[in-house]
Amino acid sequence: MENMLTVTDVSRSLGLSTRMLRYYEEQGLIESGRAEGYAYRMYDQEAVRRLRQVIVLRRLRIPLREVKLILDDPSAQWAIYVFQQKLSELGTELESLGALREVIGELLGSLKSRYWLPAGDVLLDEDISAVLPALTNSYELEKERARKMENLQKAEENMKLTDVRIVHLPAATVAAARYFGPDPEDHAGLMIADFTREHKLWKTGDVRLYGFNSPNPPPEGGEYGYEFWVTIPDDMDVPEPLEKKRLEGGTYAAHAIKMGDFHEWQWLFKWAYESEEYEIAGSGTPEDMYGCLEEHLNFYGHIQETTEGEPEIPQLDLLIPVRKKGG
Image (spheres, rainbow, N blue to C red):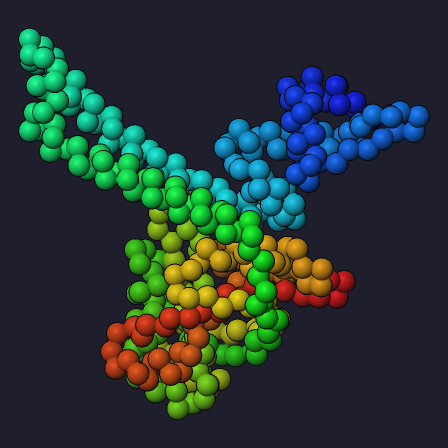
């Protein structure tokens, strides 16, 4: 029983009820054991440490499902994603509260300046009525966002990707276009599209287009970068501001999505974390999206069909670099 704590000891030291401890155990967040000669559940120091982590995440209002994913993740990638989503939610909530504060402030000022009138009359003032629709819309948008998030979470709970493919990307020379700032995909994509048309790359072979965040959006939101790579012949010169680079290729877990369904990245990462055969082999840095790629499918055909501007590509492959476990 050395270094083992009873349920009562843990409950008292962490301020958790024994019922909550049992619930966390049922959800797979912690494990208990039994010491020889002692009939009741006990917790070792690792379980207590994990409970402390659970408490921190719950105080940050992270749902239990995400808590388990974060703590089971050998890297910080899942935590980064969850915290980015939480910051986005809080930003929307703060906007709604700011609108409410502004309306109440104007209403209070009107009431004070005409204190001799019934409050009901002031409520119908034109200045107050003019700002109420924006407030209503703000809350309606928030409710709609919450509904969508709830539906998405329910879908994620039941979601098991069955269409993940293991693919090998061949090494290739690429022309790279990067843009940092508002709408980076549009700016970088236009540079690549113009370069592709100018050099008629479709005549050189099966031209392919890859992209990735460079760097990822910051956790608090704001500007980020995006970089496109289009495959080119090894001996082709690349004019500035484009750069000539090398795609090393390798083994990737691939999952096809419709354009815009980027929330499915988390499903692909979940598949990779839970795979019994493969493990993630990325760079470990958000500066290049952890080595992950987005291949814009059938770029060869779409670029020929679009005479100017960036072609619309309705389908992408999400690509996570992987390797065989124990390999």
